[in-house]
Amino acid sequence: MAKRTLRGGALVCPLPPTMVSCGDMENSNIITIGWTGILNTIPPKTYISVRPTRHSYNIIKEKGEFVINLTPSNLVKEADYCGIYTGKKVDKFEKCKLTKVKGTQVDAPMIDECPVSIECKVTDIIPLGSHDMFMADIVAVNVDENLFDKDDKMRLDKANLVAYAHGEYFELGKRIGKFGFSTNKKKKVRK
Ligand SMILES: Cc1cc2nc3c(=O)[nH]c(=O)nc-3n(C[C@H](O)[C@H](O)[C@H](O)COP(=O)(O)O)c2cc1C
Image (cartoon, rainbow, N blue to C red; front, side, top):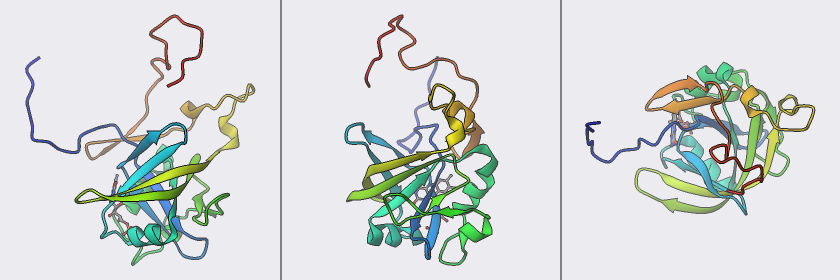
């Protein structure tokens, strides 16, 4: 296939358009973050890259904590809204009618309507250019009770999570495989 070579750009996708909550139960904010992912398995480490001009930047820097809330398709509009308006001017929890729930390990509130809320404590702040990367330990993961089946298996396929690719939002489609399915091995493989 002939390829078109473009100049270097931020085009790894799909990514999760997460709603990151920060602050505490009294003074909180939500910022939509696409630049996020997993950095390490043991200990579990993640990152979010945030422009220093964002209202959330100083909150996260001062508190050293945040929560990554995964966005289900019924909240995609709210996620987009939290990525357009600044918490300097609007209370996004109130405007989006989202419910704050106290974090179990951090002061930052979790978003109750999100099926998965990942509590994080910042370990490093790395300036990269346009964005600073907040590297963080994942200290707790909260998953909706109804996403566990009768065998206690976590069924994230039931969470209707959203993917973000090159400025557009998508629903996840049907499952087309699972980890290790390309081999016939029964044994569990650790990543
Ligand atoms: C889908 C999406 C992804 C975004 N990803 C990021 C990101 O990774 N880092 C960032 O600094 N801003 C990102 N933004 C922009 C911020 O969410 C936006 O500027 C927001 O209004 C900042 O809120 P705040 O000023 O209340 O902190 C994204 C926006 C959208 C809609």
